[in-house]
Amino acid sequence: MNVIYWFSGTGNSFYAAKKIAERLEDCDLLPISKLAQLPPDCERVGFVFPHYALGVPNLVREKLEDIDLSGNQSAYFFAVETCGAFPGSCLGQVNTLLKKQGAVLSYGTVIRMFANNVVNYDMKGDPAEKAAAAEPAIQAAAVAIQQKQAIKIPHTQLLYQLPYRAITATYPKKGLQFHADENCTGCGMCAKLCPAGNITMQNGRPMFGASCEQCVACIQWCPRRAIQFGNKTQARTRYHHPAIQAGELFRAAAPPAKKSLHSPQ
Ligand SMILES: Cc1cc2nc3c(=O)[nH]c(=O)nc-3n(C[C@H](O)[C@H](O)[C@H](O)COP(=O)(O)O)c2cc1C
Ligand code: SF4
Ligand code: SF4
Image (cartoon, rainbow, N blue to C red; front, side, top):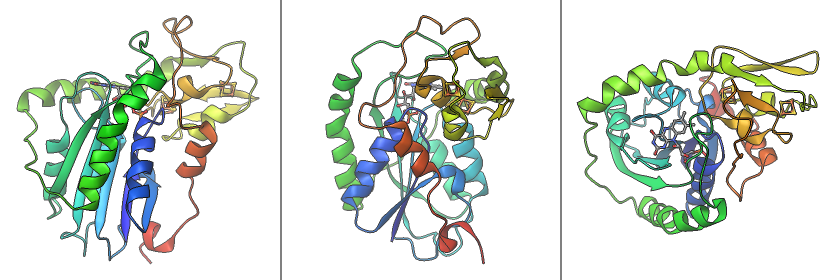
């Protein structure tokens, strides 16, 4: 069997993961938050995630640090990183983490998609055009993975590691800078979508904690555009991948439990 673990705030990486899974036969598509122990008979194991500040999202790094690869060291490991503008590759970072567990990353690629970090900038570009432009690279990755192509994984430049650590260390507490404004209807979608469990509904209003991944899912998907980051985002547009809907993302984030994948017994 094949398994892809994904992390995605606005659906770009989820869309890429879904297309790759469609190409492979017998492929489970699972949120990386569920990653603990792999089933014993994996043929291909993939990780698909966005590029954050010169590296992988905190949750992806933490999961790869803790992963138990017993019996799977010789599987075909691949990684697909989606990015907005600056494709400073973090494939080397994934390879280093896998090597600590006796495995290697055989293949990886970086795919440019819509730049979604609404907290930092006013997003520009046509989502449909950007999605269409990414399609050939996604299909090429799917074919390469199906054929188990191998490439030389570039080392992550040391120069990148300090800013990566410094920037991503600020993410958990940045969650405290989100708030819901008067347009909130209390629908609870933001809490359902949060991959970090950082949003709790209290008296019909979302409350944000200090365990944020900065995935921007809450602010981007809120159907009322009611979530703001301080006073920066009131006038900014919102984005999600045009072919992905919120319901699909949160159903995929809570797949039916499979004993072989999620529990060691
Ligand atoms: C917190 C954060 C940091 C990001 N950092 C970068 C970056 O350093 N370089 C870049 O090209 N894109 C960056 N992006 C943009 C995302 O990598 C890109 O839009 C990605 O495709 C989003 O994937 P998703 O829809 O699966 O969440 C960042 C996005 C966020 C939310
Ligand atoms: S998704 Fe938006 S409208 Fe719904 S509870 Fe969250 S902030 Fe309120
Ligand atoms: S609070 Fe919002 S930005 Fe932070 S992890 Fe949850 S959904 Fe993502």
